[in-house]
Image (cartoon, rainbow, N blue to C red; front, top):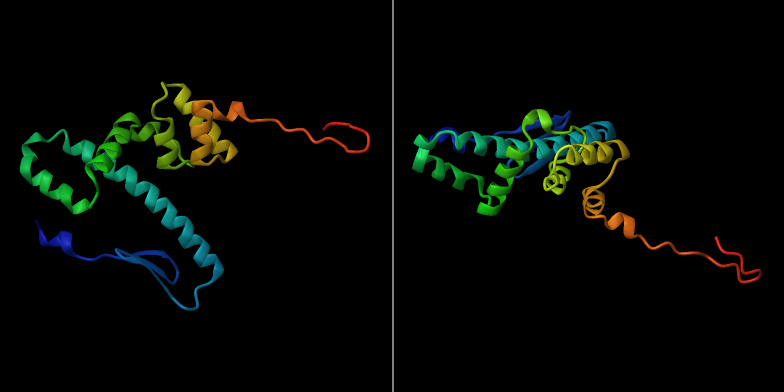
Length: 161
């Protein structure tokens, strides 16, 4: 393996906050605004890194001549075979131009089994309505339509609402 892969890097998440391989180094006097910006940047990087992992693996599939060296590089990720397979599947299912900004990689994973254009419509709705990944799953499986409606009854007059 090239020595360059062993070099530790840090990324500025915001003023006073550095992301390293082992976590965030936060200056003692960091402002709330800088903290909030770092939190948002960190989440964006986490989401982007899952996409990038899949994109890189998908790209490697077009280079069979890389052979054993490719396999050795995979071990550097520390990810399970299942995780690497899922990342590759999602990158293939959603080419870069088909990915919906504003919803996470996990949102995309929940919608992946749907055919187009249903999957795109679901993700756009999730983005526009601020759904969680679990809400995307509920809408995909129809669980959201099985919600039990409960009524309250007034003990004095019996009126229900």
